[in-house]
Image (cartoon, rainbow, N blue to C red):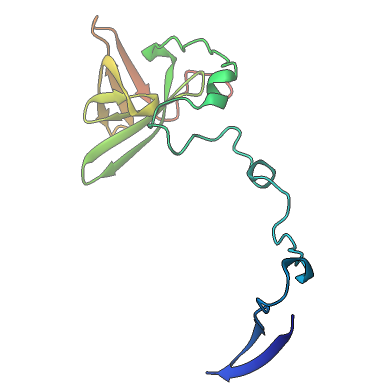
Amino acid sequence: MSANIRTSAKAGLAAVMLTAAAPSFAASPASVSKLSVEKSTSSQTAGDLYNSSGLRDPFAAPGTPSVSAAAAPVARQQPETFSIHSLYLRGIMRDKAGDYAVLVSQAGTTYILKKGRLIGPKNKPVLGVTGKTFPAQKKVLLETPDKDMQTLILGEDNKEGL
């Protein structure tokens, strides 16, 4: 088997073409030598290159736990016992939509009071708790369904040390 090498330069790029002469059909199959083919890729698998542990399966529906997440034990936390008396006022802000008050519980959970509703973690309203913001007096009034009221003043913390 013989090989011819041709070089061409087109548009500033050099290309090398390797052409092999076709074997003669007159030769016997035993006389044609076998070509060795080298492997062009490594023997690594996808698992060697990419570790998907702890990540959501992109082909699963949103909210569906992944296999690795379902197999892992979940540490359960005790839900925080909510009381308007365990909150302190962290700040009051105003924008086009109205006044906002930032409240923090003794456990460190942040709540937002806006438009008379207390919004808790994960943007979910705290049912039954209403409130009113008084920016000029730097205070907030919270009320529960059983008419329990709490007045919070900016700078007066219910938790010592903060």
